[in-house]
Amino acid sequence: MSAPKRRPRRGKPGDLDALKRQLWHAVLTAGDLLDSESAETRLRACHAVSQAAATYRSVLADAETDARLSALEEIAADRRP
Image 1 (cartoon, rainbow, N blue to C red):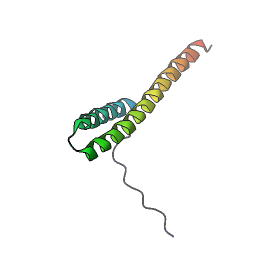
Image 2: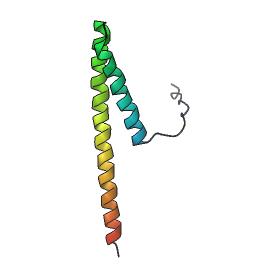
Image 3: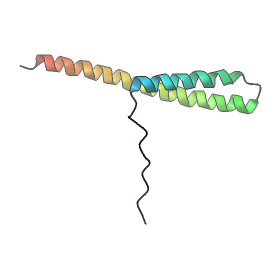
Image 4: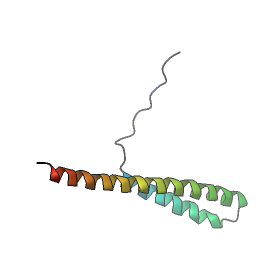
């Protein structure tokens, strides 16, 4: 059995701010589809909003944790002799 092929990397990894912007855009875009005439589109939009919003909440929590950790590290660095 051969090793799985690796995908080529697509540029630099993103940052949390860029990810937050993209996820919020996804929430808004999917939210616009909630008023669609098609029941299938509305159902898919509900699922998309739910998934994107849950991921957005998780990213926000991670960003807040990163900010708090950075503040604590700065305080600890200031207290070192």
